Amino acid sequence: MGGGSVDEYDDDTGAIQTCLGVTKQGSPCKIRWDLDSFGYCKYHSPLGKQCLGIARSTGQRCRIKWGLNGLGYCKFHASSAKPRRCIAVARSTGERCRITSGIDDQGFCSVHQQATIQTLETERLRPRCKSVMFHTGVPCKNDAKPGYDYCCAAHDPSLPYFSPRLFDSPDKPRAMLEPQLIQLYDNRDLYHKDPLDLTVPGLIQLDHILEKQCFAYAFHGMEFTDPKSDTMYLAEVLRDEYVNDLSNMCLTRAATNQIKGSAVWKFLDDTITGHIGLTQSGLTSFTDYMIAERRDGTRLGRNTTRIISREMGRSLKSCQYKLAEEGETPLLDRLGGQLQDLFVRMDLYAPETEYSKLESAAKSQESGTSDAMTDPNERNTDSNAFHQALSASAKPFVPGQLQSTSSKPTQADDDSDKRSAGSRGKPSAKQKMNAHDRSTLSKDGISRPIDANQSEEAVSK
Image (cartoon, rainbow, N blue to C red; front, side, top):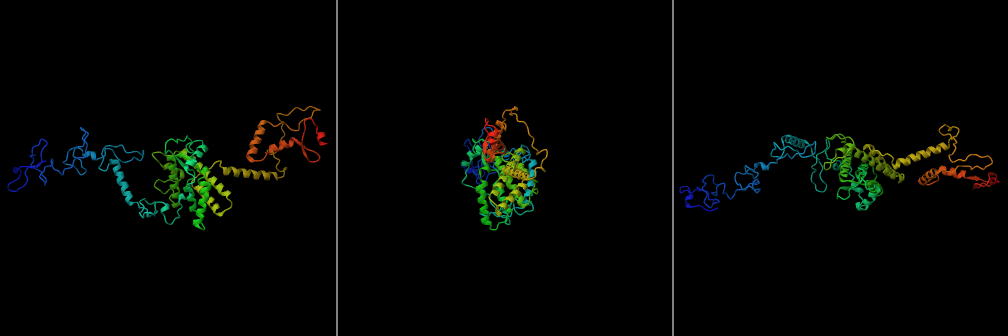
C-alpha cells in the first residue's frame, strides 16, 4: 500500500476521490467508488479479513478478503461452513444419518430437523430433578422421572441411601484375584463361554456376579435399631464373607460388565421409586433392562442374559446359605429375607445350587429315618420288598464241598463304595453288608473272619 498524489483529493470538499492502495504491479489503485473511511477500496482495505475456505486448485487458503459472510467465508466457499452430511444419529441403526442433501445451518436434514424441534419442545416441558449436588451445590441437570420430583432414588432426601462402596475391599485387587479366577473358570468367560483375551488392555474386566448394588438394595427394606452400627456390621459381614469372595467374582468382557451393571442399577432404582413399566421404554423385567442397554454398539443376546440370570441366582442362593450358617441372628435373618425378595423381583433362577443339594440331601435323610422307624409289615410293598438274586460270580453248589457265604465283590462295586465313602466321610451301607458277610460271630460274641479251609462247625466250636 502507498499514499496518493495531490490530484487524488477534491479541491472543494477535501474528500478522497481515489483508493490509496497500490496494485500488485506497483501502480496506484484507480478505484474511486465504495471507499472506506480510511480511503481504501474493498480490495486494499487493511481491515479486510481473509476467507476461511480452501481453494481446490491450489489446496491453500482462499485469498479473498471481500464479501465475506458472518462465518468468514466468501461466496465461493459459503457452502463449506455447512456440513455436507446430516449430523443426527438414526435410531434404527445407531449410526450417523447418511443423508447429504437439504442440510440446514444446524447440520440436520429435513427428516431430523423436525425431530430435533420436537425433542427440544419436549425437553422444555419435561421437569428437571429438584436435587442439589451435595459437594458442589449445583442443581442436578437430569430430567425427573414421570410423576416424581427426582431423577433417581439417590437424590430423594426422603429415602435412605446406601452406597455400593460400603462393600469395597482394597485388600483384594485384581492383580491378586485374576490368576485364581483364570484357574477357577479354565480361562473362559463365565457369561459367553469363550476364551479370555487378556492381551488387549481394558478388554476384560473384573465383575461381581451378584452386583454390589443388589446388597445395597437389600438394606432399603430393613428396619434397623441402630442404623449406623447395624449397617456397618452387615456391610462388614457381607464384604469379608461373600461380596468380594472368589465365588462371587469372574472375568468378562468390558462391554458385558458395563451393560450388566447399568441394567442392575436402573432396574433396582425403578423398583425403589415405583417406576417399573412406567418409563417411556416400558421395561417390565430385569431381562428387558439388560437387552435394552447398549455399549459401543454392542448389546446382549437372550442366551447371554439367561446365563447372567442363572449365575446371579446361584450366587444369591449361595449367599443365603452362608448367612444361614452364621446362626440364628435376627439381623441376618431379615437380610436373608430381603435377598429372597430380590430373587423373586429380578426373576432369577438357580438350578442345582449347593444350597438346594444340601436341602434335598437333608430331606432324603429325614425320609429314610422315618422309613426305618415304620413297621416293616406296613411298608412291605413291591417296590420296597427285597428279592434275592444269584450273583454272576457265584460258584455252583457241589454236595460235600464247603461253599462261601458271600460272593466276591466286583471292581465296580468297590469303586462305587470308595466314591460314596469319600463324599460322605463314612462307610456305605454296601461296605457294611460285605464286611458283615465276610465275618461270623463266635459264641463269645467276637466277630472273626471265616477261613476257607475251616468248616463252619469248627468256627462255631
